[in-house]
Length: 65
Image 1 (cartoon, rainbow, N blue to C red):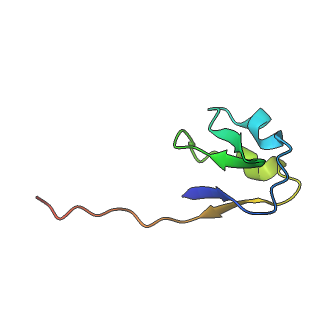
Image 2 (cartoon, rainbow, N blue to C red; image 1 turned 180 degrees about the vertical axis):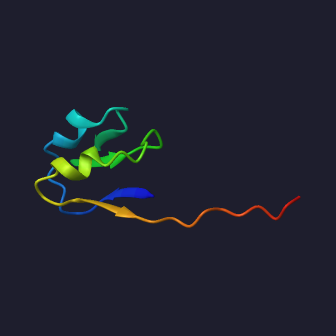
C-alpha cells in the first residue's frame, strides 16, 4: 500500500501527532509522508479533512536472475 496526501490537507499536524514512526512532516503548508511509513493507517483515521488516501501498489516482480 501507499499513502498519499491530497490537496485537502490543511497542515493541522494531527496526523503527525499519531504517526508511530514519525513518517509525516509538513512541507509548504501540507503534510508529506516519508519512506519511514509502515502502513499502519493511524493518519487516515484521525484526518478530519479526509486528505490522506491509500493506494494499492502492485509488487515489483523479479525476472528470476
